[in-house]
Image (cartoon, rainbow, N blue to C red; front, side):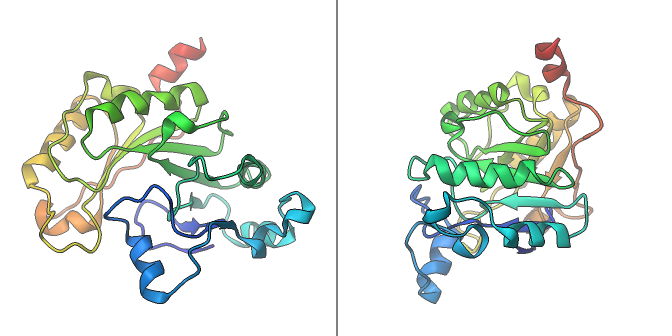
Length: 242
């Protein structure tokens, strides 16, 4: 667990190590593994969770780390790995979510490309998001978030490769993030008009939007960097719970 340079979180926590099997061509983590010769084997972090012999129970180390940081911190889980990939055993996810439940003083942010694989309801201190890069089918997958009852549901348009056809139901999400691909120069740079359309649709639907710093040269300043209103559930969530 370490302080993060990602602007919308405070810490990143990667309890699952190894090269992510989703295999996105733009994955910066894969390049880091290859550059530094890190162990590519998929495994649960033994320093935090102990070994298979103790049934993946979170050991004292993970709780010490979580207790040491300031209460109310935002912690991005599995920033370099797909938590809901079929290669991740249920026991690993059980251990991770147990640590989340046992630390309600923090907010844990989870971002997935495979929302259709989410196998459990979310604890109250989880913000659950889905990555959409332009594929129309990704919108239908995004609605899988609702059955998992997260307090905050968000979408990340990152990397932004093309104009996004925004759905009319954008208002049912609590937060929108957008950014460009990491480490690819100007080859895959988004157009300002694409960002503007996202911002306009967010304003129309009263949805907080967060433009990442890596879009500063395209968008200009000041950047819009809003966060969701955690004091209230979304109107959609209130309706389905009533």
